[in-house]
Amino acid sequence: MSSTAQPTLRLDIRDHIAFLTLARPEAANTMNLEFGHEFLAAAFAIEAAPGVRAVVLTGQGKNFCFGGDLKGMVGSGCDVGSYLRELTTNLHAGMTLLARLDAPVIAAVNGTAAGAGLGLVLAADLAIAARSAKFAPAYTGVGLTPDAGCTFLLPRAVGYKRAMELLLTNRVLDAQQALDWGLVNQIAEDDSLEQTAAALAARLAAGPVGAFGAVKRLLSEAEPGFEAQLARESLSISSRGMTAEGREGIAAFLEKRAPRF
Image 1 (spheres, rainbow, N blue to C red):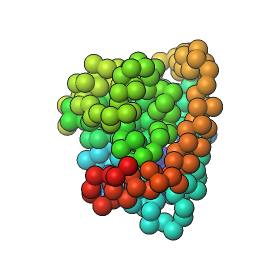
Image 2: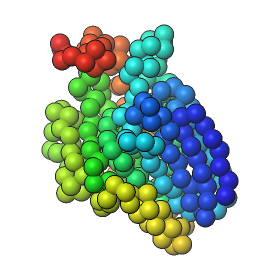
Image 3: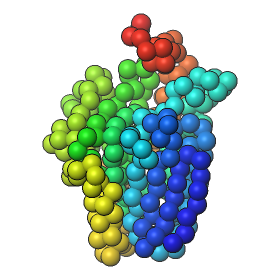
Image 4: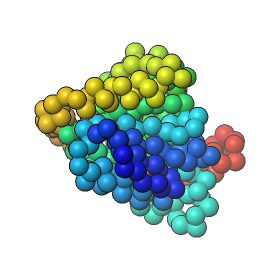
């Protein structure tokens, strides 16, 4: 087994499976600039590691990922647009690397997946939800637009009308609704999520990974545009972060009040 320890992420590779864990449980595994850089570094490490035949992505603690770290964003001293541009540039590059792997990527979703956390679930090849898991876009609630591939992947998973409903209303789906709508492949009891994901990863790791990679590419290239859409999302969310709506939405979220758009 080989492992690397990082402040915001933990990567462990054993038995040909890479376990990538979001490791900011005290902040609901939200994404700050450090996370963006380390996520990209972890993706490079997985790509370069010999013999990785499956990947499991999960969150440490009670939640999978609440998306971007709005508190850290405002407190960083950077302008919000530049912050979001840097974060999404690294996050999207890491997601692209994982998408290009032959190895299937499995999201094991504990607790809430919101914002870019939902994007990570959608970008995974397969997803298992804990019984208590919840899913929400959350972007427009703070005056921002989606990133992490949500505008490309969400309508492909649930259909155009449902995707529009989720993105405009920020409706929260529970695990059963997520399964019914096609966001996840199966539900596991909370105390068996990790074992269920590991068992599926082991099964896939024993399979024809080269063929799996070819299938992934055929599906992703059937409707060209994922990487181009990631670039458009990065530009949009960083631009939105500098608008009056974006500033008010983020401020209202941090002040725990209704936004005045």
